[in-house]
Image (cartoon, rainbow, N blue to C red; front, top):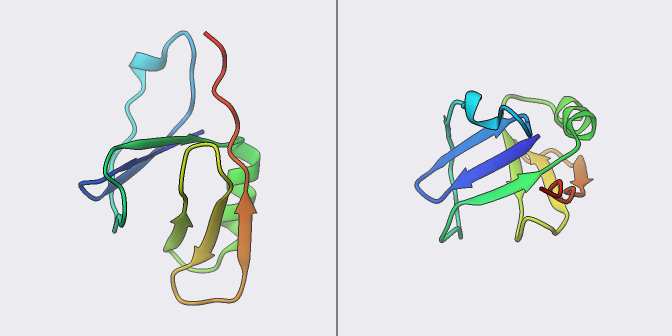
Length: 94
């Protein structure tokens, strides 16, 4: 799965497809984006991302990320104590 963060304040999550990648467009969701100067795309293993999101209560999740290759910290927006550290995966070779 690819998480794309736009500095303008949107986030989208879409599957990573090789052959038919241009056939899929992910909806952009409004987001509060801080500290991003350029769009950032981070790849995750879909089952690990699903498990992380299911472990967090509530409808809002905070993704704290620095670069597409550094670990990402996920927490609930309501200040809950649970934290989930998720390691991105490397993009597939073309």
